[in-house]
Length: 237
Image 1: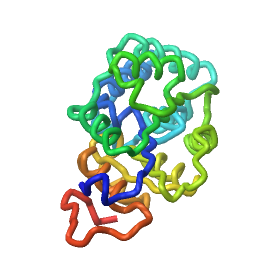
Image 2: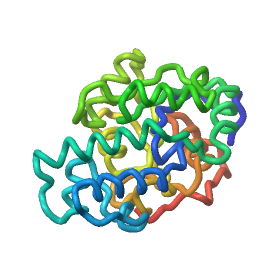
Image 3: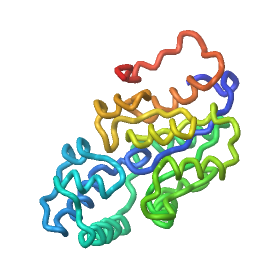
């Protein structure tokens, strides 16, 4: 990564679940419990990743291979909320060190998630990372799209030059939201969707958070330092 003197500051908007959190197993358990609560079979991690989509109701439609009924949906949302409230957030290995390193280099960071806002804030507090983020926003209204939440987040930050902003996430929905809001995006392949799905989003795909940060900084709108190559970037997109 270039030194702080060689780069202009960027602002990184981090996704939470599947990105800073290594919580695929948690989500598989929660979604399986939701499925079983409505009489459907549980899912495994491969099924979860290959069928993952947003919004959540469409995801359960895919898993059930039928539309979820209006009577079943409250059961699903209640079961999911119960599982999330009981968990301890599993921060991805090296994430805390990386966030601190980004802050020391004078780049700014914020957090945006479609996790309910009170739950998100509790989880961030549990990881001890609250102070790292300039702003933390979870979901305030059911069904809010990531693109809408991201636009609100950016406006609240007061960021006028969106060329210097990059979203780091783990789903195609993250990519669509970033593109809709006119910011860059880097996708991490270790989260909720496999790399072959992420490559269809038209965004860089990387295999570690360190690689995502390097790419976010190196590809900001300024002359790049010659000879820097990120060999972890998946160029098949």
